[in-house]
Image (cartoon, rainbow over all chains, first blue to last red; front, side, top):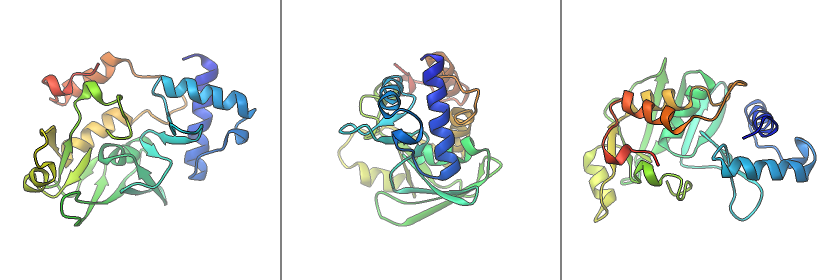
Length: 142
Length: 69
């Protein structure tokens, strides 16, 4: 990953965090150059593009599209790609927050408050189905 | 990578599938903070495999399931 791609990644994340939405390529520079850079960053697992288009899908831990993991932090609602990422949004923003989702088994709503990195409901459990060696085989499924 | 009400709910959701790994919400928060803390820092650099594996090891997430490629 060269300095130009690191800079593109920095500007992409900064845009997303400042505005609460993903940029389109033209908002960051020459569209062709931006998309080419995003594709390289996708290959390096530094962000995730939609498989069928050049649109951003994940700026991990943030999801660019709505998911079952909603996070309230720094006065805004965000989406996490999964439970790990939802907690990670508070970590990345260096702030407290609230994660809202539902149990995949029964559909009951689950809410977790995160304060100084601590959770208010230790009874909830996180289950990771895919072994670490295969997380990036299909990151959307993972 | 989901959050569940209890072990019973995980088992019912899995059905006949092989279970993965289960940790508490508190441990998940520790993991998330160690893993994602620097993600939007202007000084961010990609973590190496060794750095990420060290995070898992430090939190006691060991064994074949948690070995990164």
